[in-house]
Structures are given as structure tokens and as C-alpha cells.
Amino acid sequence: MEGCGEDGQVKLLGMAYSPFVMRVRIALALKGIHYEFIEDDIENKSELLLQSNPVHKKIPVLIHNGKPVCESMIILQYIEEAWGNKAPNLMPKDPYDRAIARFWAAFIDDKFAASIRGVFTGVGEEQQKAVEESVASLLVLEEELSGKAYFGGDEIGLVDIALGGLLVAVQAIARITDSVLIDTLKMPLLSTWAHKFCKAEGVKEVSPDPAKLFEFMSEMRAKLTSPPAGN
Image (tube, rainbow, N blue to C red; front, side):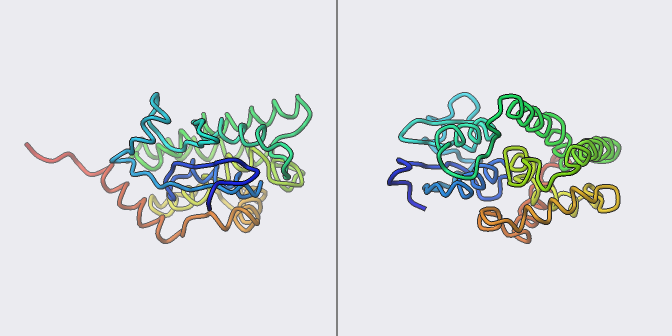
């Protein structure tokens, strides 16, 4: 998509298989914001990425009218503030409700995303502990979802995108590691939410192919968990 017109010049530096880039693509799609997607090679980072995010040198980076914004959760909040006149609202208007949304988004990054990374990279007892921590976080989110279609209420919001952007990767990790993460019996609300979220307009269009993602992540895990080469 070319970034032009009333949205200004919008570019997104990222990688199609990154769950954190996925968050930003979902938000842009839901808002109907046109942008240019620039694939970056994380093993051979582009000069544009290094200039745009000199501190962390990571994707995603949103460039709006030449100004870079880094970190997926910060980008999501920037999108809501920069294009607040475009529906849907990704964050509540009420200051308290907005603070609560930020709290749960931070919980997803600080607790769940951190532990799911351990499931993907760990082995043995270390991996099992990460699975238990991931499930514990999901059970907390199951309780928070009670009585609502989405974390944002009737529509997809910040917290839905924070967790939903990770969904396809989480499903792939569960398969690769033969782990049960979102248990349909223990987490019926989350299971229903996940199915609905993945099928939603603006989400399915930007989701990576599950089979290709599974292959990509299987290769990555093999590299991360293989023993070091001999002397």
C-alpha cells in the first residue's frame, strides 16, 4: 500500500512474520490508513532502520511524514492519537478506561510475551516453567474478558491488538513445542475471542500464512536450541 493523500506519507519498517509488526499492521488496517510496507532483514539491517531506530535497532518502526516512531505499543497509541478522527477508536475516551487499557497492554508485554518467548527458546524444565507462566497469564486474561466480546468492549481495541498480534505466533509455538497454551476447556472465553479476532475484517487480511509461519519459526527454534558447534 502506498502512503499518500490525507494520511500523509506513512511507511512501516518490519517483517511479515513478526508478531509485533503484526500489531501495527492490524491497527493501520482497522483505521484504513494507507502505508508503504518495507520489509527489513533483521540479520542484515537496512540503513533506514538503523537511522530510524538508533537506540534499539529493532522493528517495527512507523515513519509518518519523515518522523520515526518505535516500539509496537507506542506506535499503536501514536496511531490512535494521530488518526483519532478515524474509526474505530483503539482506546477509550474516558481517562480511567484508557489507563486500564494501557495496564492490560503492559501486562501482555511484561508477563505473557516474556514467558511465551521462554516457551519458544527454552528446553526441558526451563521451557516447562515458561509454559506454566504463560498459561497463568492467559487465565488472568480469561477472567478480564468475562462479559465482553472483546477486551475493548464491542469492538477491537488496544488490548485486543496487543494480544491478538501475537496469536498466530503463539499458535505456531504451541505446535512446535507440543504445548497446550490456550486450552479450550480452561479458557472458553479466550478461545472464542481468538477465533473471532482472527476472522475479523482488518485482521485476516494482514495475517501471515500459518503454514509458512510454522516453517519459519520451526527453523528459527532449531537454530536457537541446537547445541553449539564443537571446537
